[in-house]
Length: 115
Length: 112
Image 1 (cartoon, rainbow over the protein chains, first blue to last red):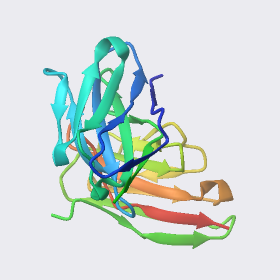
Image 2: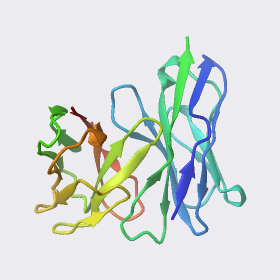
Image 3: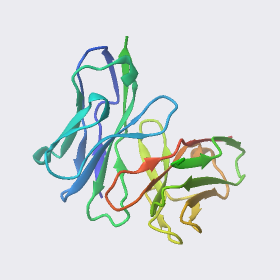
Image 4: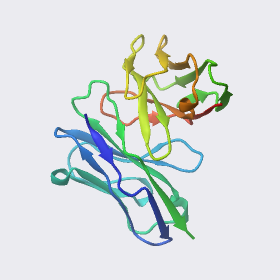
């Protein structure tokens, strides 16, 4: 079975600092990869996704992620965070032999940006 | 276009009571999902459906049942609630295999 690890559970940054959140998955086959964001009191929203092609994916609000197949990683980055980026971030994986189109989520990283 | 909606938003139950959570989507999506979210554990899949009239178990199905009698609705039932089922429940849907899932606003359930 596939699994997803997010090693940073809590991250605190000051505004304008750079962000990198780690995501590693365990699955030997082809995968689709996602980052979702959950702002306080809200539902999950898609930040970006990778299906194929260029391993550097750009998403909304200045976020990007890089798929490194050899490292089974899909780390999320942002060059300069804002207070409004305070949220919980989830990495998710969908294995391409998965008939139910099920997502496996990591445990989440809670980001706090200090003004 | 309301997307994915969930009712109720909040509920408090006593141990042993039953309830049904309703998820509705107006996007004509085939696939629908129920997750629970607990601190530090991300979202875990309870049950899912790949089309009207079909359901299947996810990672944590025990204590829950589901039904998908209409394509747009996916119901999650708790027959005899337990304190371990205190959680936030999210419904999601997607239109085709491999694509992003769209999430509802969640239901916060407390079982005393």
